[in-house]
Amino acid sequence: MARDRTARGGRPARRGRGAARAADDVTAVPSAAERCLAPSDAARARPVYPRYACLVKPNDDRPLYPDKLVRQGVEGTVVFRLHFTDPTQAPEMVVLDDGGSVLFVRSLRGYVEQFRLPCMGKEPVDLHFNYVFQLNGAGVNRVVLRDLPLGTFLRAVKQFPVGSVYFDTNLMKCPFDVRMTFLQPWNRNRIDELEEDVPARRAFLDWLSGMQLDLGPRASNQVLGQSMTLHVPCVKIDL
Image 1 (cartoon, rainbow, N blue to C red):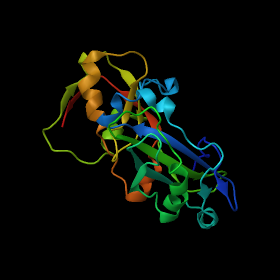
Image 2 (image 1 turned 60 degrees about the horizontal axis):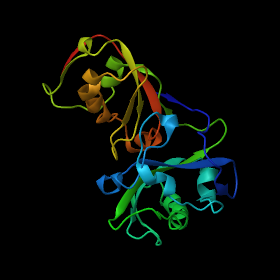
Image 3 (image 1 turned 135 degrees about the vertical axis):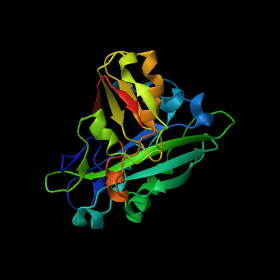
């Protein structure tokens, strides 16, 4: 992990002062929506959920990046769930992480109330979002993930029960690299194999998807949605 990086991509948020960016991203869809949404998002090399393409969002009315937080240099990722019960009505917004300030949430509410899911059926649908408020330019102190060897990564995660894990990567066509996008603690991390899909790795990758970095609340919020490459050697993991 490192600190201070350039702003992430996304459409600019409206704001009173300073340069800022904000971007929203569907991160998970619970079971009620799985048959409602279809594969998309080829850039992530991962099947997403069928009817995400039908999610209607406002084109022009972007959330305001709170002027007070711009002046203070505060960034954050708001994690929330939208509960759709009617294709023509506003969803209910359930906030899971306010990104460090209730001002971010206040800015978002009017925006997400305009979301619609016209392709939904009779059953309710939940969509999970990360909305990133991030300032442009240098001088912002933030946590940034860097690529790591597996052993270093495992020393940085929250502890798990001793004797609960055994994997032999020699049986997984090692060595290999995987790309991990952090969504914990709100969703399982996304794991992408970079070279080939090896069935023998699936249990191991599913285990990695449950890993949570041992960070404080602010740093944990900053790494949400960030990706890193894990270098997995030929090794027996007995923890």
